[in-house]
Image (cartoon, rainbow, N blue to C red; front, side, top):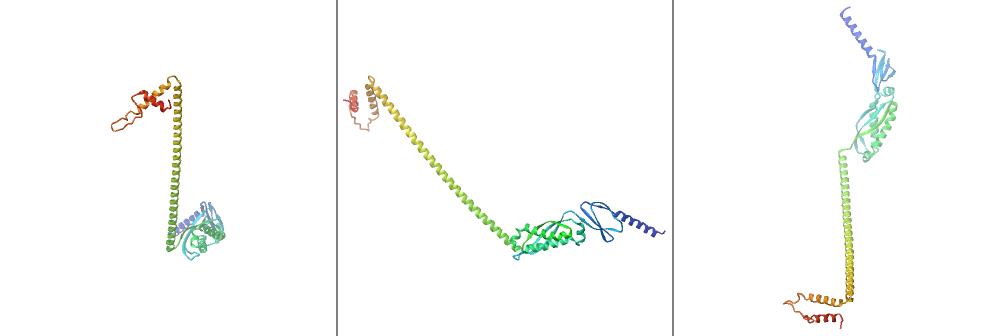
Length: 305
C-alpha cells in the first residue's frame, strides 16, 4: 500500500471518528434542537444527551426557549396632526412551539420587528403629537395585541412591548420646551402670589391678635386698678370709721374730752411750723400766746359755748 493510500485511510478514519463524536449531542437547558432525517423533520431534542445517526440525521435549527428582547430600530411615524417623529422600542418574546418557529416562518425575529414597526406607524397615525407622550401604555398594549395574534401562528408568544424613545423634530422640541418653560413660569408666579397672599393674611391675623391681646391686657389692667382703688377707698373708709369710733369712745372716758382738745391743739400748732418766714405774711385767726384762747377757739370751731 503506497503512502497516498495510507494517508487516505487515515483521513477517512479521522472523518468517521469525527462524525461518530458529532453524533452525540449535549443539549443545554432552555435550548431546543430541531433534527431532520434525510431532509424531513424527525424530532425536537430538549436538554440532555442525545444520539443521532451520522450522515442520516442532521440538526437543522437550534432555538432557545428563553425570553428574548429584540430591539426595534427607530422609524419615522406621522401623527394625526402631520408631525414627523422617530420612534423605537423593544419587543419581548418567547418561543413556545419550536416546530412552528422553525417551519412556519423563515425568520420570526425579523418578521416580528417588521410587524411591530407597521403597527407602531398605524398607532401613532391615529394620535395627535401631544397625546403620543401620554398614550405610551395604550400604544404598547395595542402593539402587543396585534403582534401576538400573528406570532401565535409562528409558535411565539409576545410578552410585552415597550416604546423607548419618541423624538419629535427640533423645531417642535424647541416649541414644546418654550411651552413647558412658560407653564413653569406661570405656576411659579401663581405660587409666589399665593405665598404673598398667605403672608399678608398671616401678618394681618398676627396684628389682629396682637391688638386683641393688648386690649384684653389694658382692660384687665383697668379692672385691676379700679378694684385696687376701690379696695383702697374701702380700707381708708374702714380705718377712718375705726378711728372715729375710737375717738368717740375716748371722749366718753373721764378726761377724754380734754385729751382730744389737747391733741387737736398740738396738731393745730404743728401746722404753723415753718409758715412764719421773712418772705411770708402770716395772718393768725386767734391769740397763739394763750393756750386757753386756742382751746376756746377749737371749742368754738367744734360748736361749744
